[in-house]
View (cartoon, rainbow over the protein chains, first blue to last red):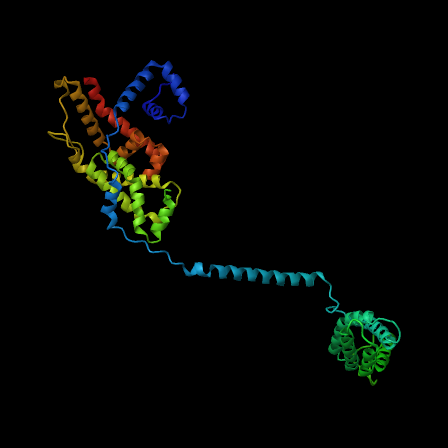
Length: 254
Length: 190
């Protein structure tokens, strides 16, 4: 049988033993350890806490008066510049995050979307321009024809106005391409067409016959229709003609 | 409604020095008790109380709230008392004298064989216990007081004295062993 040493007995006395049940069992079974433990208890039980002298209810006040003069006053903490600038810092960080996200998004979008304009093959690019231009000229021609015949009966100008609005955006792109290609004749025709499209797009819901007649006269829609037809026929006849050669035609060219 | 310790602390740190008076009044009795038990006399205990509240005020900005403010003051007081015991120990350690005088650390040890009066004997035994307590090192004495008289756990003692739990436990063991050795002759003669 392994006896309990003094340290274990002290631990048991202060109820900090790792195995109190085991200690208790051993003390019941072992007379020698029980005797040692009884002596330890007698010794420690005999050491009573000192009787603390009574202090009155005003003791705290007395202590306070004795130390009060030695206590400095804490200064109210002033907000540091870091605290002042913290909201602005957050705002700047957010703005930076948004900017980075925007730029990254744009970059990603460009990578994902194949662009006609950045095609490396000049012939392919020219082909695309011709197709787009041909389609645009077709739709413009139809619009002009409808405009020239509108107003004499119950035909509403609403479809014309909607079509003009759609064509207006396309016309600007095509005209921009003509400017970049240096084709001033095409650009001039498209410029005239654009002015007409702007007028049409801003017509009231139900334009009167007088309004339409005035528009036709002011914008010379007959002459514009003629130019458009010539342009369209040339686009169809020579779709891949290089742009570099000087044009001999007067009026429109490609 | 009683103002919380934390709101008082914030008020003090905002410049309201007098708010500290409430904390002093709230904890002065507890602080005095532990200081008295560790130092063993009133004047040292009074000094420890003042020192504890001065230190507490100075460290108030560093109070992190990991323990209650009561525990925090208690630990400061125990350390102040320990410091005082450490400073005064060499010249006041259990000197024998004609009369018992705890203020001067003087003890009268009775001739046990000569005193048949049990009451007188018990006083003499108490004096002998005080002499035995004086024989402990300041750390042993403080650890023993906190363990035996204040019923603090080993972990609390370690945190109070800023030592490892095992060191706190060893300090208590050494104190008990020394006390028993010092007091053993009394039991033989009684």
